[in-house]
Length: 500
Image 1 (spheres, one colour):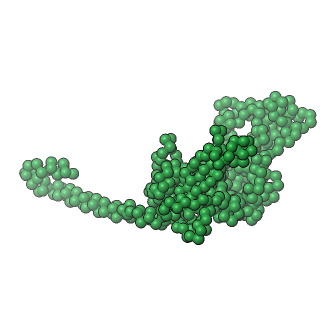
Image 2: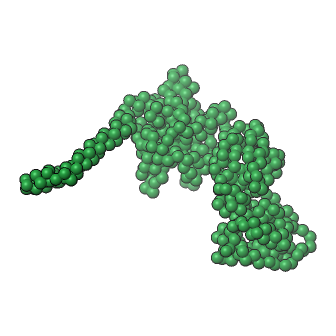
């Protein structure tokens, strides 16, 4: 703008006078003035609309919160091969455990009950520790006992003996009310530098970083480094809305991508640990998989959401309530289910031994079921596998059929074919003997030796059964079919598109 003003100042007077005399020039001048006034007014509005927090200091808030944030120091007995329990060293003559090598871990935590001495941190900060120290801002040091921990959410609860003193504490906040763009503060012990305060915003919600089955992290650009683990993430009201847990970094230092456990998830875990010493998660008794666009289309759903039941565990809550393999769970306990991870979180958070309403999509209709949930911690999950039936005596039909619309070749599951592909002849289903490499079936991972148990949720016991089900889907105008596949001891659903 300065350059333009300077350029205009050197124009001959006659030109300026002639422009002033021109009505069209006067009109343009009025328009320019109006634009300039409008721009100034808009700039004033934008300045006024800036968040107040952008001009405020966090000093008062930090001063209020710092005393309740603690440093965590834990020691673990180690050997050249790694971590060893102390009784191992004693039994096998490796000397006194007091003199054994020890690894030290540094982290952060925060006090939620100053009278009872309850401290929250991450499970990975104190896991396998032989000794845990809690150090306050004024360097007062306490030896802590582990009340309980939950590796699935990486939450741990400690207790220290305050000897009658009431320590500073911080309150929980509502993480569900936190919005992307909100200001947050992280306080902790990064790289051993205790009492460090950093500020940033919430960058994203509901992040899954594949750290566990219940991932639902808050992402923040507030600087978080090694040692911040277990420390609090505060909102501007001074409430804990997250527990700082992980960072994304290729160098090991902060690059502005940190992750915190939402407070609303942590509160339930902490409350259960304080009451029972461990978690008490709900258990439904089903194996589930994602509902893809192809699967949704094959089931007549208007969009892909929910969790597809691939197996119902014997004698579990779901079996008692009438769940069936192929059901899509679209609502659990009055909450819509977006995907499998959301269902896992909803079931885990639900009260055990209570009946909850569940809506499933079955054969083009919504069906309401009412399971009474069990307790996940009491179930041997490793043993919950569908058991394959024994091979039948004799051999059934021998014809082999080619389904060009799916790009596969199928054969009856008789003993000779089963032996050929190294599978057990289960007496049910149809064997896939060949898959075209350019087909959608191959792209979806279907391979020779897979056993088709169902097509579009209808059982198939022969090659003819499968041919009829595929033809029915074609005549109905479907673009794909839903196959229930058995591979080894696993059963999964795969939607395969028709070749056109």
